[in-house]
Length: 378
Ligand code: SF4
Ligand code: SF4
Ligand code: F3S
Image (tube, rainbow, N blue to C red):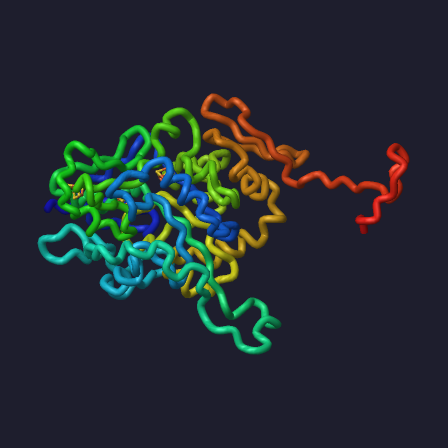
């Protein structure tokens, strides 16, 4: 297997990868704000209803939401790999450990494992289970010592996809026009090397068709300038999709660039794996930093500080308000002096505008027009 050196900006260094560094014209990306996710699973069901209702797809969830620290789908996907990968130290912002490509056993493309069939049997294992036990008086301490949070997951449409690198049939490709990673259903022969290699376990083997499949980033919607099913149906309005530039090309009016590169508030999931994943997370502010650092890398504390100060930055607050505000793709955003956040399409047409603060109407105790008293106001 040829080994090229490619640059991965998330770990701030070069690393080995079987193919050369080729970046798409535009890269599909999304930001998920974990502080707002309520694990209602609307995204999970919207995706399932759209793409995976067939026979053989019963266990397939292109999107799932798991409770951390005890939820996994498939069982133990991250803790198993973290255990196999060895020490994952950072030297400042630079990753000093091995990526899954660098830790690959001889003859393999990545370090990894093939889940057993039973590992897919409990998609909701650990749901709402917190870390720690509540002792008397604990409810009086802040922050709470008992915690959990919800982690929504889809395919990361990685810049360096392990699934693509591992497939002996070359059945997986990354689209040059938008960076979406797809499995060619005609070429796939069901070798499952992609399932073994993907550290996020986002390719799934279909028991009926005997080939693999995965999240397609709802490309029929994206091609029409619309956001993905899991994003537009999100009840908590925690998600926003967009195009992400490389760090040196960051545009402050591009929502993804602003959150990932400029504010540095949205972080990749397990950047140490080395895939440059393109789904970014705003980490939960109430969870202990060591746990979050392992999961989202060294930028966690700064991200939490920035998020806590969002109320002092109208541009940031405005962009957070635009999450879930439209089904259309937001290419640029602006926040006006009168505190209106607006989203624009690729042609500069305004698609949506939202006030940062909801207007407050105070109704009088005695309404002269209706000649009534209102007793339920304070
Ligand atoms: Fe492939 Fe997994 Fe990355 Fe998706 S998350 S592109 S399935 S390696
Ligand atoms: Fe499912 Fe589309 Fe969301 Fe992928 S982008 S998880 S296919 S709804
Ligand atoms: Fe390749 Fe995975 Fe199919 S390894 S052949 S895409 S099952």
